Image 1 (cartoon, rainbow, N blue to C red):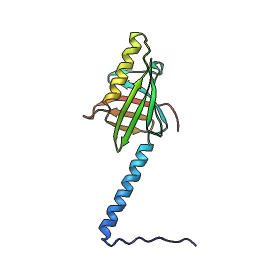
Image 2: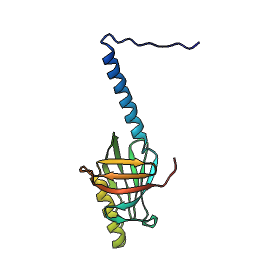
Image 3: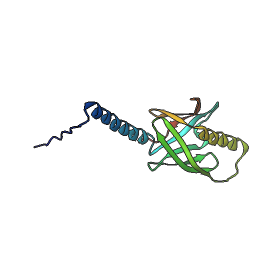
Image 4: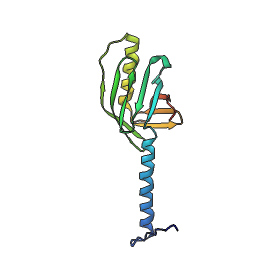
Length: 146
């Protein structure tokens, strides 16, 4: 036979409702964080620059808060943090390979865009990264299917 647990709050039902709201918000935040964990993305647009798959640029979000990928010429790595709709990258590092100017230009635009990111919106397999004014800095297509 299943047992039912009943909680009684001496400070009233409003406090219980507040606690329920806080617990729901924490659960929503955790679900929001899981929204990018384990996913891989390819930019389709950085600012006004449109990109195809041949650019070789991608971004991976690990479940442990690490991020890595490839800028088209150089590999990169670092950390990311999600809180509600806020996304920030930190402790970023990059290899130091040299490539043709066109590739380096795309890569520099990509890294500059990542440096401006303050928020994100995910709509299925599309990820839009925006700056602190809400301006889109990059748009991505998901490349994995988890």
